[in-house]
Each structure stands twice: as C-alpha cells, then as structure tokens.
Image 1 (cartoon, rainbow, N blue to C red):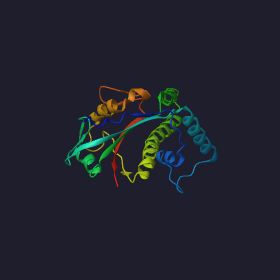
Image 2 (tube, rainbow, N blue to C red):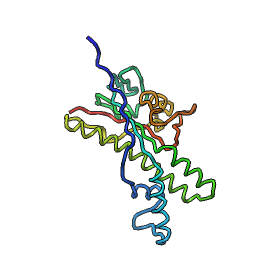
Image 3 (tube, rainbow, N blue to C red):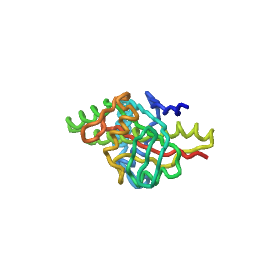
Image 4 (cartoon, one colour):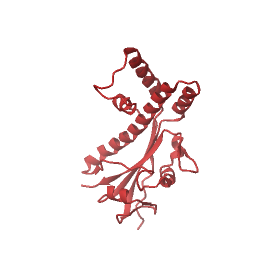
Amino acid sequence: MRGKRMEEPFYFDPIRIGIPAGAILRRLGFRRRLTRLPKSQEKWVADWVREAAGLITLKGVSRVLGIAANDGECVGLEGGDEFKSASLAGLLKGCTQALLMGSTAGGGIMEAIASAGRTGEMTRAVVFDAVASEMTDDALGWLMAYHAGGLRRRGGRLTARRYSAGYGDFALEYQRTFHRLLGLERIGVTLTDSCILVPEKSVTAICGVVNA
C-alpha cells in the first residue's frame, strides 16, 4: 500500500491586502490620543505610507505537513525534518499537522528604503521600513485566514499564535529548513550563509492545525 503523498507548497502571487495604517503608526511610535502632529506632517506621513505600499509586491507560500512526533522538546514533521524547540513543541501540542508559511514584500521597497537613506531622507526611510514590516507580517495573517476558512468547514482550526525561527529557543538556523520546504526561491527569497532572508522584508512562520 502506498503512503499518502505529502502536500506540496502552494504559492500566492500576488497577495492583496489593505494598508494596516494603525499598526504602521504604532510601529512608528504613535499613540492614539497622545501623539499629535501638525497637519502638514500628518500629510507627509500619510503620503509616504501610500507611496511605500505602492512599491510593495506581496508574495507568499504555504505548506501543510503532518506532525509525526512531538515529545515536548522536538517536533518531527512528515518527511523526516525536525525542529528542536520546547517553545514550538508547546505551541504544537495536540496538533496533527503544521502550517508552514513564508511571505515577502519584494525587492522594490528595499531599494527605495536604501535610496532614501543615501539621500538623507531618514524619516521617509523609517516610514517605508515600517510599512514593509507590517504588510509582510499581515501577509502571514492572510495566509492563516485562507487556511482557517477551509479548516472551519471541516471542523478544524489553527492555533491562534504562530512562531518564527530566531525567536526564543527556535534557532535561526531553521530558516534553512523553511527555505527548502517552502521553495522560497519561487517567490524571490534567498538565504545568506548566516540564515538571513533576502529581501530583508521577508518572513517565515509555523502554526499548528488542530482537528476537531
């Protein structure tokens, strides 16, 4: 009897989401009812946010893999890959599958950030950076929502939280595993020798699938 074939990565190009204005302003240090800017500066920030969003081309990839083992310290995936992380094992406790995800804002926004820095437009560069960070992260949320809808119809759900390599005891070196399993080169993302994703505004994450 043949074993079940592993699910292949699914690519989303492009991902279209709205501009998360509130999250961007919070990242920039604005506090509701506390931060006040002159109207002219408010317009500059709003214009830069829109400009940055126009330079971003969000792409994403997701893949669902079965969890073969979880001993509380190490998570084994179907296919033989392992993630040694007690924090991740705790997140995935009781899960039968894992959802692996990756997203990127593309190279255009990074070129614009670098250009603004070279010409001394540091505030503009900071705003661009915040927009790229928040929209790339929101793309992961979009991927989770995409999968959550199908799971709900089958009586399942995703864990509310997701976890990324480089946080806590989940070593950054596992970016190599994400890059390989997700085929991140298909969405233009490469990996440096020190396990940094390029373009910089690219992220990966994992969450769990709980069956009802």
